Image (cartoon, rainbow, N blue to C red):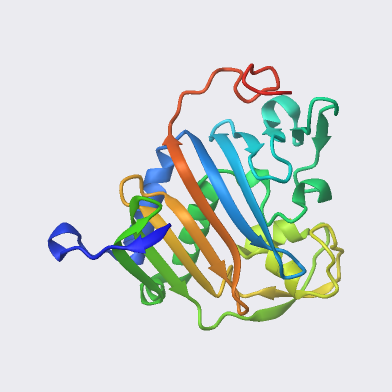
Length: 275
């Protein structure tokens, strides 16, 4: 549930978008581990939406992720990503009578109806994206960014930052040798989903080849709405819009900052898991 509360200026001070992002960068850098429930809504290529819910544990360094699907479809499926132990694959437990599978986190099975990968788990991806946009725009960022204070989002008092890019559009781009849609999206700080969605000659995330001419978005989104917890200074609600409307939405609920994990918490041997 989202609602707005108006407080006297005695209880809040105005803050610019760039100053707020600087505070977010500092706050996220101090956190070494997380546990949270994530609720997602992501547009599919057929213009319907995929809804998801999962329990997530994240260790920042060495980067490790445990995810348990809580949504009705695939409920109970567990995923581990621990490159130091298992290499650059995701280990998936689909159920008691199915052997554990090792899957490419960038492959089709792991990416089906997903805009992002397990490699971007946690909060650093979103704050790095916002910080990159801020740095690219310089002084113009605070013209684009509207910050409201004392907004109640999922029972947490938040800042609400709204970014509107009136110049959002698409430009032609020729894929380079050894360049994937994933590497291109990360290098340009744009949405990999919008690349696939916008180009009729791209069927999925793995459909790329050197020399292919595509159109890529000029920014990650035309409009973004970010809810930033005023205490933790973490983005706990994210909405992204293109020229059509909402294409992805994420909510981070029941967030625990710096939880103490067991030594084997990100392995198949951890007693709390079903691997």
